[in-house]
Length: 416
Image (cartoon, rainbow, N blue to C red; front, side):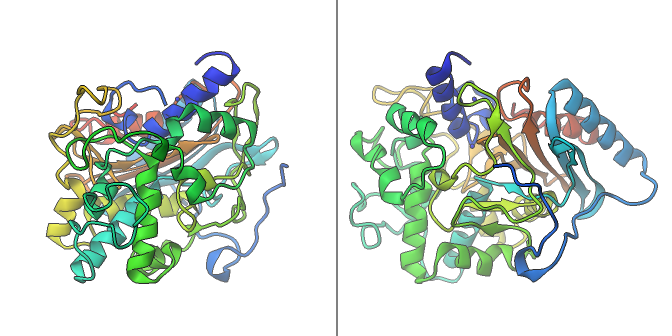
Protein backbone atom coordinates (compact mmCIF):
# COMPACT_ATOMS: atom_id res chain seq x y z
CA UNK A 1 0.00 0.00 0.00
CA UNK A 2 5.74 7.53 -0.20
CA UNK A 3 8.77 14.67 -0.52
CA UNK A 4 7.81 18.26 -1.90
CA UNK A 5 5.14 21.34 -1.54
CA UNK A 6 1.54 20.46 -0.69
CA UNK A 7 -0.05 18.97 -3.80
CA UNK A 8 3.04 17.40 -5.34
CA UNK A 9 4.06 15.99 -1.98
CA UNK A 10 0.59 14.48 -1.52
CA UNK A 11 0.74 12.99 -4.98
CA UNK A 12 4.17 11.52 -4.35
CA UNK A 13 3.07 9.98 -1.06
CA UNK A 14 -0.14 8.63 -2.54
CA UNK A 15 1.84 7.08 -5.36
CA UNK A 16 4.05 5.50 -2.73
CA UNK A 17 1.04 4.17 -0.86
CA UNK A 18 0.24 2.19 -3.98
CA UNK A 19 3.83 1.37 -4.72
CA UNK A 20 4.52 0.33 -1.14
CA UNK A 21 2.10 -2.51 -1.68
CA UNK A 22 4.50 -3.85 -4.27
CA UNK A 23 7.47 -1.80 -5.38
CA UNK A 24 8.98 -1.01 -2.01
CA UNK A 25 8.67 -4.65 -1.15
CA UNK A 26 10.64 -5.41 -4.28
CA UNK A 27 13.41 -3.16 -2.94
CA UNK A 28 13.03 -0.88 -5.93
CA UNK A 29 12.59 2.89 -5.92
CA UNK A 30 9.15 3.91 -7.20
CA UNK A 31 7.45 7.14 -6.22
CA UNK A 32 3.99 6.25 -4.67
CA UNK A 33 -12.81 13.83 15.57
CA UNK A 34 -10.80 12.21 17.89
CA UNK A 35 -12.98 9.98 20.05
CA UNK A 36 -11.19 8.48 23.02
CA UNK A 37 -10.85 4.74 22.53
CA UNK A 38 -12.70 2.61 24.99
CA UNK A 39 -13.34 -1.06 25.48
CA UNK A 40 -16.52 -2.16 23.81
CA UNK A 41 -17.96 -5.29 22.33
CA UNK A 42 -15.79 -6.30 19.42
CA UNK A 43 -16.50 -8.65 16.52
CA UNK A 44 -18.46 -11.66 17.59
CA UNK A 45 -19.95 -9.79 20.55
CA UNK A 46 -16.97 -10.27 22.83
CA UNK A 47 -16.11 -7.54 25.29
CA UNK A 48 -12.54 -6.29 25.49
CA UNK A 49 -9.70 -8.05 23.71
CA UNK A 50 -7.73 -11.28 24.03
CA UNK A 51 -4.72 -9.64 22.39
CA UNK A 52 -2.59 -8.56 25.33
CA UNK A 53 1.06 -8.00 26.22
CA UNK A 54 3.25 -11.00 26.81
CA UNK A 55 2.97 -11.90 30.46
CA UNK A 56 5.67 -13.04 32.86
CA UNK A 57 9.43 -12.91 32.59
CA UNK A 58 10.67 -12.36 29.03
CA UNK A 59 13.22 -14.80 27.62
CA UNK A 60 16.28 -13.69 25.66
CA UNK A 61 14.58 -13.56 22.27
CA UNK A 62 11.61 -11.63 23.59
CA UNK A 63 13.85 -9.08 25.32
CA UNK A 64 15.83 -8.68 22.12
CA UNK A 65 12.68 -8.02 20.07
CA UNK A 66 11.39 -5.55 22.65
CA UNK A 67 14.73 -3.70 22.77
CA UNK A 68 14.83 -3.50 18.96
CA UNK A 69 11.26 -2.20 18.84
CA UNK A 70 11.92 0.44 21.51
CA UNK A 71 15.01 1.67 19.69
CA UNK A 72 13.24 1.71 16.33
CA UNK A 73 10.36 3.71 17.79
CA UNK A 74 12.85 6.30 19.04
CA UNK A 75 14.99 6.32 15.89
CA UNK A 76 12.00 6.65 13.56
CA UNK A 77 10.13 9.08 15.83
CA UNK A 78 6.99 6.96 15.77
CA UNK A 79 3.86 7.75 17.72
CA UNK A 80 2.98 4.10 18.41
CA UNK A 81 4.28 0.66 17.54
CA UNK A 82 2.47 -2.64 18.00
CA UNK A 83 4.46 -5.84 17.54
CA UNK A 84 3.75 -9.56 17.52
CA UNK A 85 6.39 -12.23 16.84
CA UNK A 86 5.82 -15.99 16.82
CA UNK A 87 7.90 -19.03 15.92
CA UNK A 88 6.03 -22.14 14.82
CA UNK A 89 2.88 -20.47 16.12
CA UNK A 90 4.28 -19.97 19.61
CA UNK A 91 4.43 -16.45 20.98
CA UNK A 92 7.83 -14.82 21.31
CA UNK A 93 6.53 -11.34 22.10
CA UNK A 94 3.35 -9.30 21.91
CA UNK A 95 3.55 -5.65 22.94
CA UNK A 96 2.64 -2.05 22.15
CA UNK A 97 4.70 1.09 22.73
CA UNK A 98 3.81 4.76 22.63
CA UNK A 99 0.40 6.40 22.47
CA UNK A 100 -2.77 6.02 20.47
CA UNK A 101 -3.56 9.66 21.25
CA UNK A 102 -2.04 12.13 23.70
CA UNK A 103 -2.35 10.58 27.13
CA UNK A 104 -3.85 7.33 25.80
CA UNK A 105 -1.32 4.46 25.84
CA UNK A 106 -1.19 2.15 22.84
CA UNK A 107 -2.31 -1.40 23.58
CA UNK A 108 -1.81 -4.60 21.56
CA UNK A 109 -5.57 -5.10 21.26
CA UNK A 110 -6.21 -1.75 19.55
CA UNK A 111 -7.59 -2.05 16.02
CA UNK A 112 -6.06 -0.46 12.93
CA UNK A 113 -6.61 -0.45 9.17
CA UNK A 114 -5.02 -3.42 7.40
CA UNK A 115 -5.48 -2.38 3.76
CA UNK A 116 -3.80 -4.78 1.33
CA UNK A 117 -3.71 -7.65 3.82
CA UNK A 118 -7.22 -8.22 2.46
CA UNK A 119 -5.68 -9.04 -0.94
CA UNK A 120 -3.84 -12.01 0.56
CA UNK A 121 -7.10 -13.24 2.05
CA UNK A 122 -9.04 -12.72 -1.18
CA UNK A 123 -6.44 -14.59 -3.22
CA UNK A 124 -6.50 -17.46 -0.75
CA UNK A 125 -10.30 -17.56 -1.06
CA UNK A 126 -9.92 -17.64 -4.85
CA UNK A 127 -7.53 -20.59 -4.63
CA UNK A 128 -9.97 -22.40 -2.32
CA UNK A 129 -12.67 -21.99 -4.98
CA UNK A 130 -10.26 -23.43 -7.53
CA UNK A 131 -9.61 -26.41 -5.28
CA UNK A 132 -13.38 -26.92 -5.01
CA UNK A 133 -13.56 -26.87 -8.84
CA UNK A 134 -16.04 -24.03 -8.80
CA UNK A 135 -13.79 -21.99 -11.05
CA UNK A 136 -10.42 -22.17 -12.82
CA UNK A 137 -7.65 -19.63 -12.49
CA UNK A 138 -7.36 -19.36 -16.24
CA UNK A 139 -11.05 -18.74 -16.83
CA UNK A 140 -11.54 -15.47 -18.69
CA UNK A 141 -13.83 -13.01 -16.97
CA UNK A 142 -16.15 -11.71 -19.70
CA UNK A 143 -19.17 -13.57 -18.27
CA UNK A 144 -18.77 -11.82 -14.91
CA UNK A 145 -17.19 -8.53 -16.00
CA UNK A 146 -18.73 -7.74 -19.39
CA UNK A 147 -17.91 -4.02 -19.09
CA UNK A 148 -14.17 -4.61 -18.56
CA UNK A 149 -12.23 -3.98 -21.79
CA UNK A 150 -10.36 -7.08 -23.02
CA UNK A 151 -12.37 -9.20 -20.58
CA UNK A 152 -12.23 -12.09 -23.05
CA UNK A 153 -8.43 -12.04 -22.71
CA UNK A 154 -8.19 -11.32 -18.97
CA UNK A 155 -8.28 -14.24 -16.54
CA UNK A 156 -8.85 -14.52 -12.81
CA UNK A 157 -5.16 -15.34 -12.48
CA UNK A 158 -4.23 -12.06 -14.19
CA UNK A 159 -6.48 -9.99 -11.92
CA UNK A 160 -5.07 -11.61 -8.78
CA UNK A 161 -1.44 -11.40 -9.93
CA UNK A 162 -1.54 -7.86 -11.41
CA UNK A 163 -0.78 -8.89 -14.98
CA UNK A 164 -3.78 -7.35 -16.75
CA UNK A 165 -2.06 -4.14 -17.88
CA UNK A 166 -4.68 -1.91 -16.23
CA UNK A 167 -3.43 1.46 -14.97
CA UNK A 168 -3.52 2.13 -11.22
CA UNK A 169 -5.97 4.82 -10.15
CA UNK A 170 -3.91 5.47 -6.99
CA UNK A 171 -1.18 7.06 -9.14
CA UNK A 172 -3.58 9.07 -11.32
CA UNK A 173 -3.04 12.84 -10.74
CA UNK A 174 -6.75 13.63 -11.09
CA UNK A 175 -7.66 10.98 -8.54
CA UNK A 176 -5.00 12.22 -6.14
CA UNK A 177 -6.27 15.78 -6.40
CA UNK A 178 -9.76 14.64 -5.46
CA UNK A 179 -8.51 12.39 -2.66
CA UNK A 180 -6.46 15.18 -1.13
CA UNK A 181 -9.35 17.64 -1.23
CA UNK A 182 -11.97 15.23 0.10
CA UNK A 183 -10.46 12.60 2.45
CA UNK A 184 -13.90 11.73 3.86
CA UNK A 185 -15.45 11.01 0.46
CA UNK A 186 -17.12 7.63 -0.06
CA UNK A 187 -15.98 6.10 -3.35
CA UNK A 188 -17.86 3.54 -5.44
CA UNK A 189 -16.13 0.85 -7.51
CA UNK A 190 -17.44 2.48 -10.68
CA UNK A 191 -15.85 5.81 -9.74
CA UNK A 192 -12.52 4.13 -8.98
CA UNK A 193 -12.17 2.07 -12.15
CA UNK A 194 -13.21 5.05 -14.27
CA UNK A 195 -9.69 6.43 -13.85
CA UNK A 196 -7.75 3.48 -15.31
CA UNK A 197 -10.34 3.02 -18.04
CA UNK A 198 -9.43 6.48 -19.38
CA UNK A 199 -6.06 5.06 -20.41
CA UNK A 200 -4.92 2.41 -22.84
CA UNK A 201 -3.62 -0.78 -21.23
CA UNK A 202 0.10 -0.73 -20.46
CA UNK A 203 0.50 -4.03 -22.35
CA UNK A 204 -1.50 -6.96 -23.62
CA UNK A 205 -2.99 -8.91 -20.69
CA UNK A 206 -0.67 -11.55 -19.31
CA UNK A 207 2.49 -10.36 -21.06
CA UNK A 208 4.01 -8.21 -18.29
CA UNK A 209 3.47 -7.07 -14.70
CA UNK A 210 2.34 -3.76 -13.17
CA UNK A 211 0.57 -2.98 -9.92
CA UNK A 212 -3.00 -1.70 -10.03
CA UNK A 213 -5.58 -1.48 -7.26
CA UNK A 214 -8.20 -1.75 -10.03
CA UNK A 215 -7.36 -5.43 -10.44
CA UNK A 216 -8.71 -6.27 -7.00
CA UNK A 217 -11.76 -4.04 -7.41
CA UNK A 218 -12.61 -6.15 -10.47
CA UNK A 219 -11.58 -9.43 -8.83
CA UNK A 220 -13.95 -8.82 -5.93
CA UNK A 221 -16.82 -8.17 -8.34
CA UNK A 222 -16.02 -11.35 -10.25
CA UNK A 223 -15.85 -13.50 -7.10
CA UNK A 224 -19.16 -12.15 -5.85
CA UNK A 225 -20.82 -13.03 -9.15
CA UNK A 226 -19.19 -16.47 -9.29
CA UNK A 227 -20.32 -17.41 -5.79
CA UNK A 228 -23.39 -15.26 -5.25
CA UNK A 229 -21.85 -14.37 -1.88
CA UNK A 230 -20.73 -10.93 -0.73
CA UNK A 231 -16.94 -10.76 -0.54
CA UNK A 232 -16.74 -10.11 3.21
CA UNK A 233 -18.86 -13.20 3.85
CA UNK A 234 -16.89 -15.27 1.34
CA UNK A 235 -13.57 -14.36 2.95
CA UNK A 236 -15.01 -15.05 6.38
CA UNK A 237 -16.19 -18.48 5.21
CA UNK A 238 -12.99 -19.48 3.43
CA UNK A 239 -10.21 -17.70 5.32
CA UNK A 240 -10.67 -15.54 8.38
CA UNK A 241 -13.29 -17.82 9.95
CA UNK A 242 -11.24 -21.03 9.71
CA UNK A 243 -8.20 -19.12 10.99
CA UNK A 244 -10.25 -17.70 13.89
CA UNK A 245 -9.27 -14.13 13.05
CA UNK A 246 -12.08 -12.81 15.22
CA UNK A 247 -10.76 -9.25 15.31
CA UNK A 248 -10.33 -8.97 11.54
CA UNK A 249 -13.39 -7.67 9.77
CA UNK A 250 -14.67 -5.65 6.86
CA UNK A 251 -16.13 -2.22 7.51
CA UNK A 252 -18.56 -0.64 5.06
CA UNK A 253 -18.08 2.76 6.73
CA UNK A 254 -14.97 4.56 8.09
CA UNK A 255 -15.75 3.11 11.53
CA UNK A 256 -13.07 1.10 13.32
CA UNK A 257 -14.11 -1.33 16.08
CA UNK A 258 -13.03 -0.17 19.53
CA UNK A 259 -10.49 0.03 21.04
CA UNK A 260 -8.94 2.11 18.23
CA UNK A 261 -5.31 2.85 17.45
CA UNK A 262 -5.54 6.43 16.17
CA UNK A 263 -3.56 7.59 13.14
CA UNK A 264 -2.01 10.90 12.10
CA UNK A 265 -0.41 12.05 8.86
CA UNK A 266 1.13 15.00 7.07
CA UNK A 267 -0.12 13.85 3.64
CA UNK A 268 -1.99 17.13 3.09
CA UNK A 269 0.84 19.36 4.25
CA UNK A 270 -0.18 19.68 7.89
CA UNK A 271 0.06 17.12 10.67
CA UNK A 272 -3.52 16.05 11.37
CA UNK A 273 -5.58 13.14 12.61
CA UNK A 274 -6.56 10.76 9.82
CA UNK A 275 -8.11 7.87 11.78
CA UNK A 276 -11.55 8.19 10.27
CA UNK A 277 -10.68 9.29 6.75
CA UNK A 278 -12.83 7.23 4.43
CA UNK A 279 -10.85 4.16 3.22
CA UNK A 280 -13.36 3.19 0.49
CA UNK A 281 -10.85 4.13 -2.21
CA UNK A 282 -8.40 1.44 -1.15
CA UNK A 283 -10.34 -1.50 -2.64
CA UNK A 284 -13.83 -2.82 -3.28
CA UNK A 285 -16.69 -2.67 -0.73
CA UNK A 286 -16.60 -5.70 1.54
CA UNK A 287 -12.80 -5.88 1.50
CA UNK A 288 -11.92 -2.80 3.57
CA UNK A 289 -10.59 -4.41 6.72
CA UNK A 290 -9.41 -3.60 10.21
CA UNK A 291 -7.53 -5.95 12.51
CA UNK A 292 -5.37 -6.13 15.62
CA UNK A 293 -1.73 -7.11 15.94
CA UNK A 294 -2.46 -10.65 17.13
CA UNK A 295 -4.70 -11.38 14.16
CA UNK A 296 -2.08 -9.83 11.86
CA UNK A 297 0.55 -12.17 13.25
CA UNK A 298 -1.78 -15.15 12.82
CA UNK A 299 -2.51 -14.03 9.26
CA UNK A 300 1.21 -13.80 8.52
CA UNK A 301 1.76 -17.36 9.72
CA UNK A 302 -1.28 -18.91 8.03
CA UNK A 303 -1.01 -17.17 4.67
CA UNK A 304 2.77 -17.49 4.59
CA UNK A 305 2.71 -21.20 5.33
CA UNK A 306 -0.21 -22.01 3.04
CA UNK A 307 -2.09 -23.47 5.99
CA UNK A 308 -5.45 -23.42 4.20
CA UNK A 309 -4.18 -24.54 0.80
CA UNK A 310 -3.06 -27.69 -0.96
CA UNK A 311 0.65 -27.86 -1.81
CA UNK A 312 -0.15 -27.09 -5.45
CA UNK A 313 -2.27 -24.04 -4.56
CA UNK A 314 0.40 -22.83 -2.17
CA UNK A 315 3.01 -22.96 -4.93
CA UNK A 316 0.64 -20.95 -7.12
CA UNK A 317 0.11 -18.40 -4.34
CA UNK A 318 3.86 -17.81 -4.23
CA UNK A 319 4.42 -17.78 -7.99
CA UNK A 320 1.40 -17.71 -10.29
CA UNK A 321 3.66 -17.20 -13.30
CA UNK A 322 4.88 -13.70 -12.49
CA UNK A 323 8.58 -14.53 -12.12
CA UNK A 324 10.34 -13.31 -15.25
CA UNK A 325 7.64 -10.82 -16.24
CA UNK A 326 8.00 -7.04 -16.17
CA UNK A 327 10.85 -4.81 -17.18
CA UNK A 328 10.65 -1.68 -19.30
CA UNK A 329 9.21 -1.73 -22.81
CA UNK A 330 8.16 0.68 -25.53
CA UNK A 331 4.71 0.99 -23.94
CA UNK A 332 5.48 0.59 -20.23
CA UNK A 333 8.41 2.20 -18.36
CA UNK A 334 10.50 0.06 -16.04
CA UNK A 335 9.27 2.15 -13.07
CA UNK A 336 5.74 0.84 -13.76
CA UNK A 337 6.38 -2.60 -15.23
CA UNK A 338 8.72 -3.69 -12.48
CA UNK A 339 10.90 -6.69 -13.22
CA UNK A 340 9.70 -9.75 -11.33
CA UNK A 341 12.58 -11.92 -10.16
CA UNK A 342 12.84 -15.12 -8.17
CA UNK A 343 14.18 -13.10 -5.23
CA UNK A 344 11.51 -10.39 -5.34
CA UNK A 345 8.16 -10.82 -7.04
CA UNK A 346 4.43 -10.53 -6.66
CA UNK A 347 2.41 -13.69 -6.10
CA UNK A 348 -1.35 -13.93 -5.70
CA UNK A 349 -2.08 -11.14 -3.24
CA UNK A 350 1.29 -11.53 -1.55
CA UNK A 351 4.84 -10.46 -2.27
CA UNK A 352 7.81 -12.80 -1.99
CA UNK A 353 11.07 -11.16 -0.94
CA UNK A 354 14.18 -13.21 -0.15
CA UNK A 355 11.99 -16.13 0.87
CA UNK A 356 9.69 -14.03 3.07
CA UNK A 357 5.96 -13.91 2.25
CA UNK A 358 4.75 -10.39 2.90
CA UNK A 359 1.96 -7.83 2.75
CA UNK A 360 2.60 -4.23 3.76
CA UNK A 361 -0.37 -1.82 3.86
CA UNK A 362 0.44 1.87 4.26
CA UNK A 363 -2.05 4.73 3.85
CA UNK A 364 -3.72 7.61 5.68
CA UNK A 365 -1.27 7.52 8.57
CA UNK A 366 -1.45 3.77 9.15
CA UNK A 367 1.49 1.49 8.33
CA UNK A 368 1.77 -2.24 8.92
CA UNK A 369 3.45 -5.40 7.73
CA UNK A 370 2.85 -9.11 8.04
CA UNK A 371 5.88 -11.22 7.12
CA UNK A 372 6.53 -14.97 7.32
CA UNK A 373 9.74 -16.91 6.73
CA UNK A 374 8.81 -20.57 6.04
CA UNK A 375 12.33 -21.91 6.60
CA UNK A 376 12.29 -20.67 10.21
CA UNK A 377 8.51 -20.71 10.74
CA UNK A 378 8.98 -17.14 11.88
CA UNK A 379 6.07 -14.69 11.74
CA UNK A 380 6.51 -10.95 12.32
CA UNK A 381 3.64 -8.46 12.51
CA UNK A 382 4.16 -4.75 13.10
CA UNK A 383 1.79 -1.79 13.06
CA UNK A 384 3.01 1.80 13.38
CA UNK A 385 1.62 5.33 13.48
CA UNK A 386 3.41 8.62 12.87
CA UNK A 387 4.47 11.78 14.59
CA UNK A 388 4.98 15.00 12.66
CA UNK A 389 8.68 14.15 12.20
CA UNK A 390 8.45 10.48 11.24
CA UNK A 391 10.35 9.81 7.98
CA UNK A 392 8.35 9.16 4.84
CA UNK A 393 7.55 5.58 3.93
CA UNK A 394 6.17 2.52 5.67
CA UNK A 395 8.18 2.55 8.89
CA UNK A 396 6.56 -0.67 10.11
CA UNK A 397 8.72 -2.31 7.45
CA UNK A 398 11.85 -0.87 9.01
CA UNK A 399 10.91 -2.18 12.45
CA UNK A 400 10.18 -5.62 10.99
CA UNK A 401 13.49 -5.64 9.08
CA UNK A 402 15.42 -4.99 12.28
CA UNK A 403 13.60 -7.78 14.09
CA UNK A 404 14.19 -10.14 11.17
CA UNK A 405 17.89 -9.30 11.12
CA UNK A 406 18.16 -10.32 14.77
CA UNK A 407 16.10 -13.50 14.62
CA UNK A 408 16.99 -14.72 11.12
CA UNK A 409 20.29 -13.06 10.23
CA UNK A 410 20.84 -15.30 7.23
CA UNK A 411 17.53 -14.26 5.63
CA UNK A 412 17.32 -10.45 5.35
CA UNK A 413 13.82 -9.09 4.92
CA UNK A 414 15.18 -6.16 2.89
CA UNK A 415 12.02 -4.39 1.77
CA UNK A 416 12.31 -0.75 2.88
